[in-house]
Image (cartoon, rainbow, N blue to C red; front, side, top):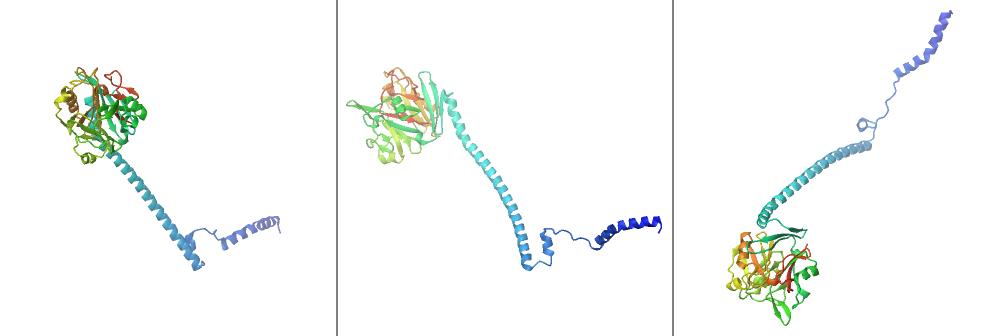
Length: 354
């Protein structure tokens, strides 16, 4: 054997294992790794019936879960869209509902001028204005009761026959504002409310039929101003008064001027005045007119006040006790200028709470 033949034989022996391995791979290819795919399991004839049914149930459950998830997503999206739409509708409706009220309120303020002081809370809004007429001066207080409990009447000393200043009543009850209320009669050194008086829905001294020029004015359980002359108790009961007092005379009723009795036109002609009234939207208006005495030479006439209230759109108006009794307290101080130089003690006061 030549040298060349020996070299060729050597390399042939080295290549033999590689050639054998390649032939084995060609003749016996390896099986692919088992894949976890339910589709392969479905077509595998070696699976027993129970396993095949289980795989089918799993596949069905998977499809239902996917379908349910998609349905829930659609429902959630629809709910969110509906909620946003309803919220937008409610907001727009609320704005639209407030527009007439806001427009009316602007009209009122345009006639009263710019407020010099304001109290605004969840229960009440009070705006204080100056009144500067040709022949008299004073203050107007516009009140919106957001909650009926924001206005109450106090009875001095919580007992008949007692009296206290409106400032004392405001301080004692923790009120933000107050005015004097009904008239009174003095007897044996004591001061008693005049005629029909209601506290906490109860008649203090029983119902007294209206006589001469007397009237009753107060608030009902809805926080609306009620008033007028009542011959029988059931007539007043129907209005459900929560509190109220009596005096003379009525100035405006249902948007119309009432006839002022001749006696009250001249006794006295001019005087400090306290008047309470209401607008058609149930906001309250209080006028407290200043004067330096009760002799008839200062303050305002009832006709002047009646005309002024009518001009600014007040619907109902009732004259309260005046003269030295006229009191307006707000934010802890006396706003008006009492004709006596100091506040007069009175049996009843209307109080406002924030």
